[in-house]
Image 1 (tube, rainbow, N blue to C red):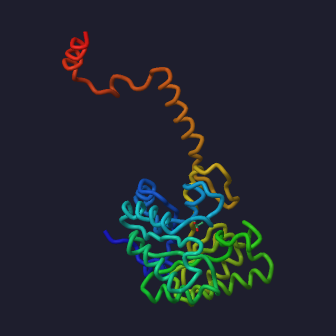
Image 2: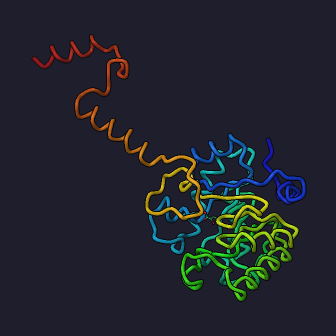
Image 3: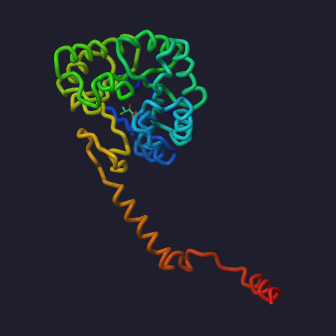
Length: 280
Ligand code: KIV
């Protein structure tokens, strides 16, 4: 079975249906997400927060990203797997950006990379694309540089910011990216960008007018309890259910109710008897 290609993703802007993307960071979740036919799996640097317990995505390293990408790629048959380039893996020089982007494909088995930033990164995107590596852009709220954007808040409500995000989106599209994540921008601005560029927009906190949607899987399953952004819809609330199951296990072990005979192995009675007699 072959995976979905960037050309197929781009065509979906015209043909529909809307594109779906979710994050995954390990083999088990990636397998579940792939099995139900999600188009793209993003190994997001959000793993720094939901898997590794950092306070932001800034500390995430190339080695951490590759480790998780390898696990995801072992599971996925059909979806496109996109590796998120961590902070400072693509800003220092174009050569280093291409080398690091290449590692996601060569070492980890990803199909594409994602990087955050607009006009100022268009030459980096061009260089990576011309090396044969498909790039997904990411503009609006860019978590790696959130502090210079005034924190984790909606971007593009005033004229200056809206203009910047619009220009960033055009620049990423013209640089050759195959799709673009729009994070935390007003729905109307996301709609305008979506109709102004040839590549599909994938919204997260960017309203219904994008060509597709992405959520952090841990948020939409209610697995991450530290905080939940207001744009997230929780499709279930697993954390309380998991805690209930864990408590039940604890109670049963403490009370001697687990394991039962059915959950134990039989046989070896003669050997046990012989050892007991030898001990006498
Ligand atoms: O790291 C991530 O999970 C992301 C998504 C929020 C788009 O960049």
